[in-house]
Amino acid sequence: GWTHPDSVAFMVLQSLLGNYNRSDGSAQWSNMRLPRSMALHADHCLNFSSFNTTYTDTGLFGVYCIAKPPFIHDAVTNITTELVRNVFKIEEAALERAKAKTKMNVLATLDGTQAIADEIGRQLQVYGRRMPMTELFARVDEITTSSMKDVAEQYIYDREIAVAAMGPVWALPEYQWMRRRTYWNSY
Image (cartoon, rainbow, N blue to C red; front, top):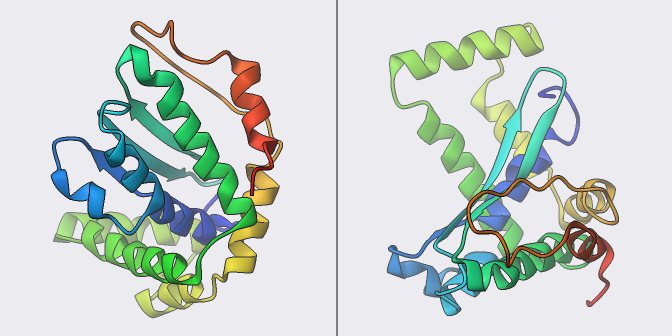
């Protein structure tokens, strides 16, 4: 949930993974590994988006991906490899960019009076007070490569996963194959 010590790390991890849309030609020059990898193999994935949805007492974190059937396996391979990579290696420069992007995303959600009122209400429900942006940004700045690796190890490395798929998914790897990739030590 929002008050969990790892909630901010998940916000940064979401930014670290990034997103990709094939129609946006700039991803091949992205400084984020997963969007760049997907762009270099543009047929593998039409788009993907990492998500982090935080509730009062729990949260959902993952990657949403749309891929053509012949390339679903390749897209899943890229995603699982990058997720597990965060357990072993996170570049300092990439983390700093992800922290800056996280701050920008927070500010972008507060684009009107309704959004600001919603945010104030959520903070009052969750924290019992309004949290200043400076405090949230300080929490983001406290994230280190070591703490990110710890969070990735605790929640991603060798953990059960949930997979939902629809459409022609004959090329989707079987669950056990994907599950094995959560402890695939290739770094």
